[in-house]
Image 1 (cartoon, rainbow, N blue to C red):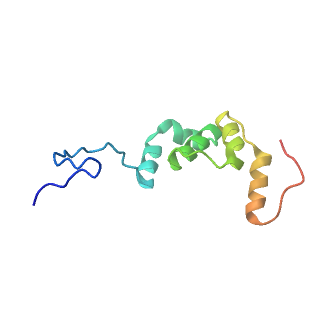
Image 2 (cartoon, rainbow, N blue to C red):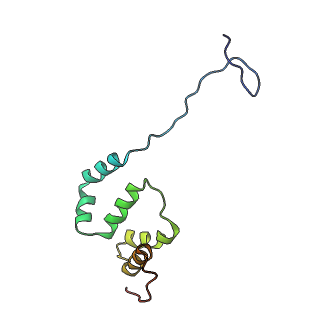
Length: 104
């Protein structure tokens, strides 16, 4: 059987070229990496918002947070606990509606 022809130019002297690709880690691999990061796990046990933001980033595979969580994430990465925003999101998802009081 003759080698296949190029679909663009009909040349029969084709060479196979392998593309580079990445293998995505499983959640277990990511979790094990987190557990092996002593600084991160200590920060999480101290409820350090930077550590929680880093954990979230690693578990999401580096995907950007949804727009409604962007500010919360940025504030946590800066070391703040955006309490009012977190409480508001929690109420939205639990079906209790939006909060009318503000906590900072």
